[in-house]
Length: 294
Image (cartoon, rainbow, N blue to C red):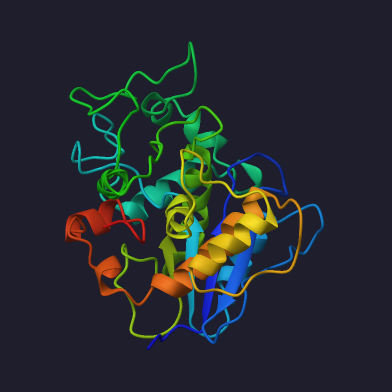
């Protein structure tokens, strides 16, 4: 039996600007029914501050999935930023540092961090402006550093991008950094698993990866984006969810949120997902985890 009443999936964005078309929220109810999109307060899209306010006023006991990285690699080098004296000791310290260095950035943007004289050296910015510490000695691949949870994701057939990568359409670095600013501002008012222990009651935030939900929904091939209602409803059916209303095209932000809300409802009672073998106390405290990675 579930203790959660609502399952909220948030497809996030690290883009600049006060409102983001790339942010989409969808909710599925524990009692059943099709997942539904949560309309933004403004037709131009969600402001990140509005998502923050929503997370601080959740209905019932809500399991929230944020499609962003809640941490940076730490286990590979025993530090987020080896060689930098300001490197924090844990995830909450990391969130606080990012928010502090971005204090002058509007809309929870993260420009102040990725351009900081020290922090910027660890990120991949693009041709000619590569961070000189993006690849540490002994890095497993030329793709940069990865967390323990991301290594587990690769074993499950998905290919996450390093959170230190700021280049390309698939990069998640900017969205993760803006998300960490939001998590810092949530503070202790809403637990973030597994940085915080899973509470016995109430709402909790987790990190999700929408590609993993798509795989369970039967999406195959290199691409996991769904761009039609027909394909979305096929995937929802595989998750045991009723279909959503609509025909023709749907943007992939909305489909990601809808599918992942239904996925959270379907899989959250699996004990294995809350106790993956790679999730040690040290990993939980520093890097966090992606719900669904085992």
